[in-house]
Length: 105
Image 1 (tube, rainbow, N blue to C red):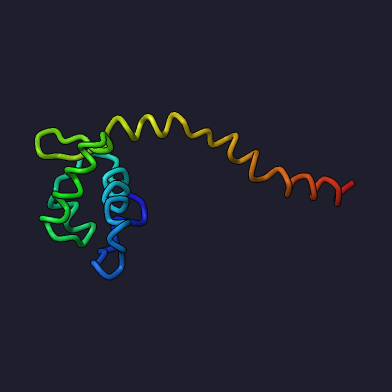
Image 2 (image 1 turned 90 degrees about the horizontal axis):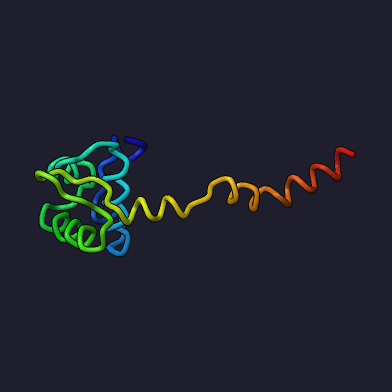
């Protein structure tokens, strides 16, 4: 998992409106199906809050539950297929590259 693996979050460190995103990010970051107890440990959220957030994520297709393990759901795949990293890089780097080209010629 990325930088979320070794950081325990507290209620004070994550605004309520962002907790569902935190859970989704942690689920995706594990790179394997993950248990609720692992999510409680990684997120610092209490179990009832975690289950409420997981239910919302399941309802919207962002998380799948199989044999009490959670993994990214089909909505995550749909979002990732719509993300064109190459085009985004070109779009964001165009101005800087153009200026560099002018300077070096």
